Image (cartoon, rainbow, N blue to C red; front, side):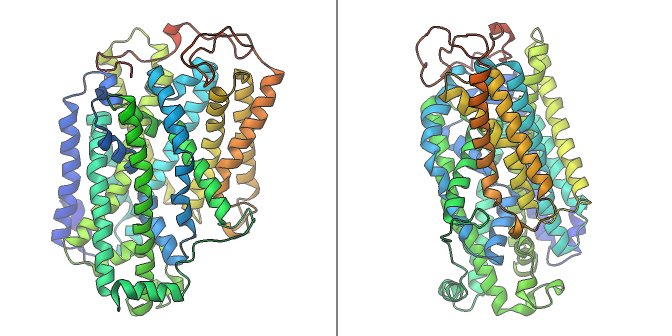
Length: 546
């Protein structure tokens, strides 16, 4: 309990709060230890032996997509602005049917551990390794931001050493993720979603109880101040216009649901295809009520502090416009919530970070083991590979924690927009390669590789050219970065495939046009390696095809 004693000296983080938070962290470690006894192979460690029910897998996908970025940035965005970004919560529904109808059956039929195995079968080893490496780099950045943001927020409003917060989140999460594998990640995600949502709902209840007029008062004053404004009807590329949020949000989520190892991995943990699809829909639909909860929480806190400006921190000097949005929720937690409740809500903040980090480190280990190590060590036994997987999980967690500690010295004005830029850099091009592979018989290995690299080059150029511009002066809104990257990959990749078609190969089962039947070789990518070199991991009896 010593680390929590530091928190007791600041604000209202009482002994009872320490007990609540400490019990939560200890429970996560014990849950990881329980599942460690069930992990006998890499199939168990990375796919849970396909014994996870759909509802748990769905909540895990939902929890993996949520993070401390959501827990802090969404209420903070509503506090500082309006509800414009709420539209993006609905946009994933536009492309979820495509993911359920095409992508999940592809992955289940090919019996993959990572989606990048498909790229080797469809194209070549270099394409697979490029996509996997890009995702791994993105995941390291994402996890580091997720660890850093709540630590920064708590440091800002309580004065607690930021290194202590980073260490608690990073070390505890790495420990139980290393022990329990994907099953620990899934079931701790379930617990963390309950804690996260429960903490936010309890906090909202206390805000409404403290606001003059309660729920009706929030609605009335919020409407008068334009805090519920949602739709911006403009064709500007730089504004959070309706079309920007719908298109950009749909493409970003589509890229995540189809190429993100942490999400695709959860399609593979259920017993069959039907349950995998249910899990996907559970996650997609869960984002809508969550959005309403967190946006309304942000607006309610704005009304509360508008009515009580003297309760703002000294740095805001009683001026609500000077209050930093990302800090308002932690400030309310430690200053306005009673002992015990404050611990529960802060546990929700920690769970938002820990759920995403746990999923991330296990998925990085899966990608490294499956895409990079196993093809070079085909003769290695399952026990050896399982031990290696645990070592890589531990290393991934340690690396992410170290990067988060380094971020304390970085001069980044907006971590949210920084992450959106990195997201566009690492996901749009990879998603484009998958689209080329699945929806075109002419796409070649050389063409897809050129398309992905062209998309990466453009995004890097944009980052460099616009690095000194304020967010409101950049020519393009961050939500569109992933869309631009995907389009460039598709156009350049398809054109390059026509110029460099490669050697003929069979596409049986690898495109939507050739599912379920054999066909003559088509003029596409180079001849693939024999099945023994495909890099697919050995399957335990539990890992049967769906």
